[in-house]
Image 1 (cartoon, rainbow over the protein chains, first blue to last red):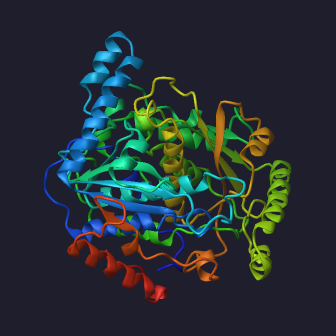
Image 2 (tube, helix red, strand yellow):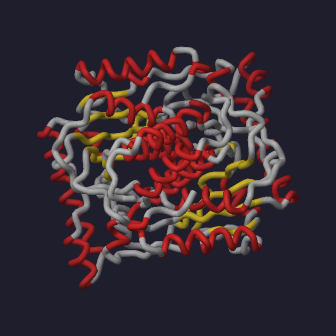
Length: 245
Length: 245
């Protein structure tokens, strides 16, 4: 199907809806994910672009409860430690947030980056040594969007020390832990991202994030207007759906 | 539309087809991108998840030809320099590859990461300081997939020094250049990634990239079988389309 250019409307809608309705999920139902569905979302991850076609990723599917308890203990320690970074009321609010579903979800997936795969000469890595890490993040986003299409929620846990996870999962030194994801059918896909919904931080206006030719230079009138139109839709009633594609 | 779980079949197909048919595009037609379409793919980027909802990204849309010539000159210097990393026949093959479309494409988009946005206390960044960079890469992948759905090609140029690009585009010190993308209607969307098609590196088998619970441990029989099934499809005739979703 690669001779096609622009997608038919329903396919295009699917792409935008996955992007619009993807959430960082922290509350899961215990239902298992069918192996064929799990294989598909891993396939999606594996089909991200990668610097010099180096495909540096691996995926460790963690269901063992003892391992997950160890990781959960570590995350909880780091969660409490991080609380000291917030002051007063904000600290109490931070501590009230549910930030991960390591034990609720049926599985976790640890996504890693092998710094030596096909190396050392990889097209594009001599100037951007970390491009392999960037590729791994693209794979994670593919996994996240495919999961959303399957009705599966994903939550990225970053309140953890990658080296602690690497030790628990027996990951070798030249392989870096990039994403630790909780994966399963969610209790719900919420209307907005949780940290936006509770007022932790505001959604930025897209029209203020786009520049033309140099940092801080305003885009041309047509693009600026099109960006503001999308910002207006975003401010509207989310229950009525996403912007028109 | 956020009360939905699994997507209807056409939407789901759209997500997987975008992932399967996304290419790193290096040859473009000069046709301009309509502002409303460009705004939509930037909207897609802005709706990636971000660590602690920090939305660290900006997008500099570069159409100025003089600026692009400067960047192209730099990339060409680095392309030639990198040739020394390859030996004999491989060096000649590397030099024959078209690796970027900076001047062919109607626009370039520089995607940056503001290391100080909403900082310093961002949920999840005290343990993973680079999670803001990871978020920015997720935004790039969203842009790439939305572009594919619109029939627009994107190529990520990593044969460049981010600090040189930052200087040319007047980007401040606390903001990091992550992705420099060529964006426009492609000459074609090829069947397979170019570096795979020319035999530069092989596509790895997904079934060999997935582990269970610990590094190098084989997944259970059901998952292993489902992964091998997808590998078999991938080896088949690509012109007949993607795996059945």
